[in-house]
Length: 441
Image (cartoon, rainbow, N blue to C red; front, side, top):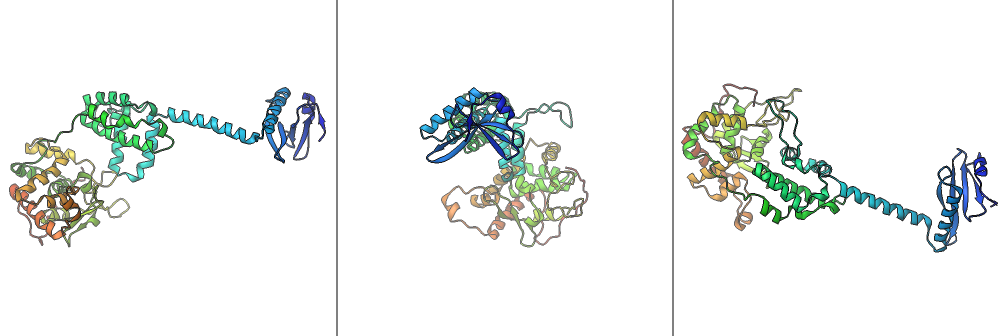
């Protein structure tokens, strides 16, 4: 290879119509200018390492001066003399720089960014209600409501969203908990549980693990800064309140919601379990309901006579395309096709009956309480309600058939109806006739 002293003029005059051409420097061994047919020119370095020729690019001639290129060539030759491959050394250097940059990104990731990734990763595994809970606690608020005056209040976690994930220390979470529990203790406790699950997920992800402080949601923080959970008192129907409650609920203008509310009381099911009931889950022949259970996945419970008559009388709707709507408690005004917010109608019924506030979960609690009047075995009531077994015998040795559950479930329903002055239909009675129907929730 002919060698010459590289000058700016010689580099400028270097041209080729081939794939590439080289101009080798006489002063710095291994240094050359490479030109391509497209007119691109760059300083390169070439040498032998362990008998093999290696070549690496130093940089564009427009960015590198000749003296700088010669100095870099000598540096590369020094590495060769030490038995180091300059290409590997460069790759390690780039990897180290990228690692530092990635670590900086991890440490700089905000709670909002990680929360969005968390939602996206878990969305398919969550129920619509659980997803809505996460969106609600993290909403920034400030926008005006569609109905009524005032702005939407930010969710409890909104204050943490701008923070860096690395800044969620025990002190920061404790301070946030103190502020939130002073304003809305129950909401703050729920938000804390969601935050704890979120940080545990982050700790399992390589992109966030280094920035997470799991002690921020440890038992000490919860014990010192969360209000003690108390058993809810008064959120249950008393035996003497049944006549007024049934009368008011049955007078609601929407028979779908009326049947739904009575169903909550007569089965002890959770709110979303019953709201998600489909016609495929109802077996009128064998008098049973398939409930999507959050504990066991699914449980089969009896369908007592009065509730069966309520469900049989509900409308079987079709959507805009003429396809049957699968939901038992359907709603043509809801985007999901089923009832979404029955609390409004329930509150109206309670007010009309002159009864104190009662949550929808209170109806579930009422079932368990009222079942004691007929001396139903605790295990029977728990199995109907879908409570997790609490004893070894219940977990491993009790396999109650549906007929046994039905025996007690019919008694429980009969007791409630009797207190309300309602006759329980016979097993083979025809369903109640729907007198009026309003397509509103």
